[in-house]
Image 1 (cartoon, one colour):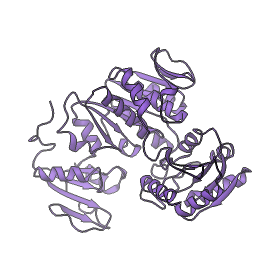
Image 2 (cartoon, rainbow, N blue to C red; image 1 turned 90 degrees about the vertical axis):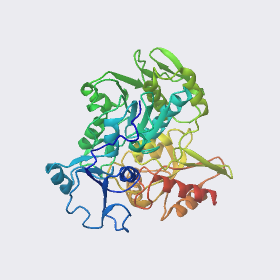
Image 3 (cartoon, rainbow, N blue to C red; image 1 turned 180 degrees about the horizontal axis):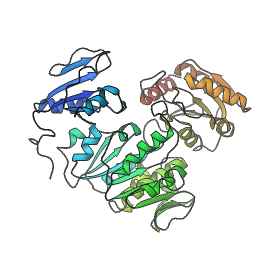
Image 4 (tube, one colour; image 1 turned 60 degrees about the vertical axis):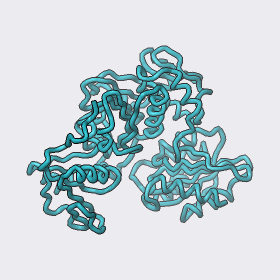
Length: 442
């Protein structure tokens, strides 16, 4: 049975605050305000007051915290001094995702990892929908989960993508947890790699039943398998797993049963084979093989992930703006048999870029570098004796023009930044859309 419309998430006299506005907090704030709660909004950014809310905007937004309940936006660390002091005074500090996991009625499948989260999450959702399962897609993609809680029931399966930012602030876990892989990421936000990994572990830390899906070829993930309190299902692209999901070079098998052939999968790249293995392991017992095969044959991929933009003058242009780390760029470049022209560089997340040296030598014929990390990649390529052409660019327009001038009939140009977007763009979507705009303007 779903949560009734007149059932409140908190006691009516509670004063509820939201620190950091955006797609996670604002829908919940508006919902609670409509239910009659006194709601406050706090944000560092200066902005006009929002009617119906107590507003604290600007430099002093964290002064005089009086609320009984505080919702933190995903991008905020949980150890903000003012928030810690408020917690010590008895304030209940939470997040949209934490409250959803605490109160949801149906089954939850959650996906995290350093690479492949969005594609794997989307595949799980598409397979379940094809199998006739009622689903909700949320977290980093899809809808706001806490505001959807009144629409779901025990038969609903929620599929959500969760970042380390979100997981660092939860104390509840899903029914099925998927960890695609672990590699250095977001070290500009996390204090170190240990904190990043520890945040990821929260996806399974509070589980009492269900299962966890791990990539058996990712040694970091395998290393903490012994900490998981529920059964673990491994996936692999390198060895046979009698009680897991594996790819033998031609087909995917699950628990000894052939599920898919490689030729069935529409989207390219070996990394997407791993994404399918994880998705199959997650939905095993909830969806039939026919649903998996239908999705494999028809799913075109997610925008900004090796997305073919156009072919012009015999040159194919791909948008893979989601590639915000060297491991993602490696997966993208390894999807092509020939050497490509790559556009890379962006915001510095303080993750190691040295692996790009041998990768670019092996997989690229030219590199167009931009942004803050473009300078670092330039030095790495020079120091490792890169034999391809190197160009630097001051903007996306400049990068696309230079890549176009380097390309010949039969070549491939791909935007694969190996870095975040925040030095020049709002997010990776905006970066990708700008690339698409520039390519279509050639």
